[in-house]
Length: 326
Image 1 (spheres, rainbow, N blue to C red):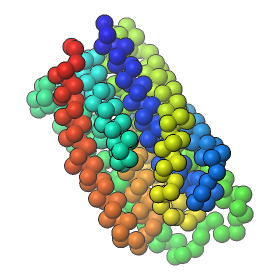
Image 2: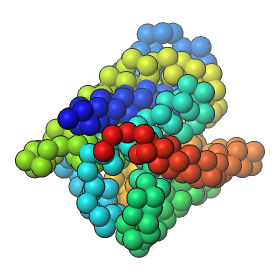
Image 3: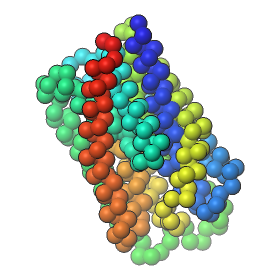
């Protein structure tokens, strides 16, 4: 009787910290671009609310545009029926890892965390027969691995094709500012339609069988938690990120933002789970073109996520499965 309410409480916590952790990665550059290196508190508040609003809208819109991505986590990836206990174990492990890394200020991808938790627990409970391996390899792991490098390549190619010319030359400061805010809105929206289905899928397994036609319930729940997390704890995290935000000019920042929004949205629409965190970081690295130090640093962080997040999330899920009631 306690598994379902506990599961929704942990789902709220995961979406909450996901919102808090990710909103700053999107709007920190917006603050730097519009206010300089020492933004006033009011500018941070406006930017965080802006990012939270469009992330929340994207989370709701995911019901209509990210159906393929939702099916990856509820049907396509698994061969066995999943239930409340499975979902609760994954949620607990994912939440613990994302909260811990956020507090320690370690870059983390909720996408890697959730997928690592699901895959390891499936293998632990059912062996290799519990997973659709062709789906895991071709529709999950391949897009996750390829998308950051595609983002880096795309922004680098755009830079080379421009031959030093600015796409915003001749525009006044007001119009440039509108472009930055529009880019942040698109990126936040794409993040919503990309992240919400992964968490809503876990909420789906918590629903009573008679309510599983009401898909809007887990989506609305996740959207609300993501928005609240973004505008509350997300503001403090954003403040810490602003001083460490990459120094990009207006052209570079716009190329990185639009590339991120395009790739993340395409992944959500076509059912390819990719990491917004890694795509955004790679797009910024590509926008800086010839800075090899940034390239290798970004590549190292992505490899580290695969090497650490996947197994740690998996082991935490197995531990949670052993300790939690069934």
